[in-house]
Amino acid sequence: MKTFEELVINSEILKAITEMGYESPMPVQEQVIPYLLGEDGDVVALAQTGTGKTAAFGLPVIQRIDVSRNVPQALVLCPTRELCLQISGDLSDYSKYVKGLRILPVYGGSSIESQIKSLKKGVHIIVATPGRLIDLMNRKTVSLENIRTVIMDEADEMLNMGFTDSINAILAEVPENRNTLLFSATMPAEIARIAKKYMRNPKEIVVGSKNEGAANVKHVYFMVHARDKYLALKRIADYHPNIYGIIFCRTRRETQEIADHLMEDGYNADALHGELSQAQRDTVMQKFRVKNIRLLVATDVAARGLDVDNLTHVINYGLPEDIETYTHRSGRTGRAGKTGTSIAIIHTREKGRMRDIERIIGKKFEKGHIPSGRQICEKQLFNLVDRIEKVEVNEEEIASYLPSIFRKLEWLSEEDLIKRVVSLEFNRLLDYYRDAEELDVPEERSSKKETRRGERDSVKKNRSAQSGFARLFINLGKNDGLYPNTLIDMINRNIGGHVVIGKIDLMPNFSFFDVEEGEANYVVKSLKNIDFFGKRVFVEPAGEKTPGTSSGRKRFRDGDSRSDKRGYGEKPRRSRKTASEERKDRRSKRK
Picture (cartoon, rainbow, N blue to C red):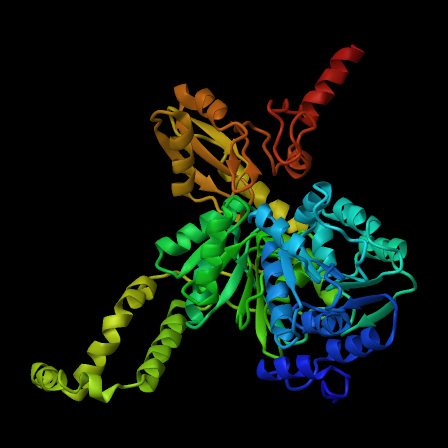
């Protein structure tokens, strides 16, 4: 393994990085630094987040700056404010002993006037988000005509965030004889197009394999019913007492809801999403960095560019739509040589997407089992005992209090005292999990034919209504997280009044329930097209031919052409005539 001295890093930079604890270059640094210092060409470097990319481009860029020329000579483009500040901070640390070198972070959410003042005073390296840099260019307050080096860090994320046009506009204003360095965790087609358009025969440096997951990350999945996702999340968190991680959700709404529920249940958690102000984002991130918050619930866009070390877990509250997003998520743990775990909480319909991810990242997901209440209590109990055993005792500070404490507790035996200390902190968890049900992991479905047969049998058994009631069909079932209490709550919240609800029969994919005959039409209209955790609800009178029976099977599977594909037709289909009725009709016509 080479040393930084062997990479021909100058003495001022060497002194700074030695003080920072840098001992030997990481693989991406060992490949990129000598090329940038010795060659005058373009580079495409593919490496995961946390592999040392900032130092890989930062050290040679600093070394090549001519401090005597008070003009911008290097430009670093990055997707988010957080990454912009992190990179500029790192570059400042690397150049601590390089006299006169000035670095300016340029990003939205802060005073543009102060950034303009700094530009007028003169800077050597600009670290910018594309949007704010375009704004400064439009105001004619920044000049890129002396830029010799352009670095695009996390370029795939910039493209995912919609910065393609901005990047094109910026690169069009930079001299053609520049060096362009493109750092990315993955290699989507758009990255290849930018490389072809703006780079001259770039050298490709790959650390690991393209699009593969981080080497030190273990991938685990938990298969649960949709209704049990939040309970599974809590059990996973409880089973890892020292967890420090990010929970990724798809939408802002889901992100805030999960964070609110976790906080209500006593977890050190908070949300990070696009609807927060910059001040709120800063507050949340500061608490997370100092570990006052142990679980950060975030959307992918809000979490881009976050630089937080020592994450133990990344939890996918459902898999993302694209595989590259999963790669970015999982790459936030297992950094800088440490190990980490990427957890996916999924239901049966997401298993195919999980297999696609396995194929691309070249790693297999381990099947996890949701911990039982007993297992969680045991894990938490021994964690408490471990903390008691390792606690630092300040003899001098507590010495004056001990005699009174000893007198107060002298009637307790050693065994009683230990039981009380443990119970003091542990009773809440024991009470919560004492009667907790096991979270069943759904087995693989045996076959579509058997599933449909079971659904048909269930329909036949549950077709008739109680006397004085009308039977209604709803396109939600147990697999959607529907339970009697959630159904009753849904009805009460949407009808704006009170209705008597009778028998409720829940199936895996749909259900039946009875309401008073006079209220049936009102309930159908009130529940029409409402949203149930992202699924459009449809309710109709339960006729003789309903989804799951022979005539209704296609409609149940595909949806009626007269309605949204996710729901069902607004009008019940007419029942088909029986074979005997059709024969009678044909005989009467022949006569």
